[in-house]
Length: 51
Image (cartoon, rainbow, N blue to C red):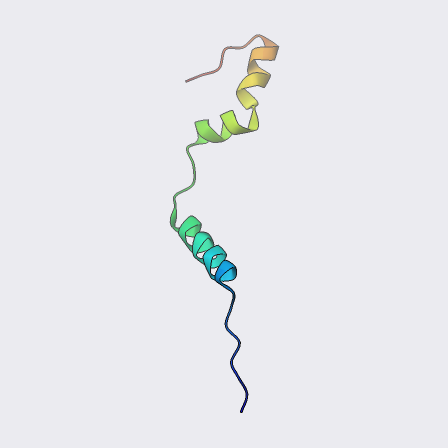
C-alpha cells in the first residue's frame, strides 16, 4: 500500500500567507512612491513632494 505524502507545516504556512496576500488590495500609490524612494528624487531636483 502506498502512503500519501503530506506537505510540511512550513509549506502549509507559506501557502496560507500567499493566499492571504492575494486577497489584499494593492497599496496606495503614495506608499509605493515612498517605498521606492521616488519622493527623494523630487527633493534632489528641488521639487517638493506632493502629499
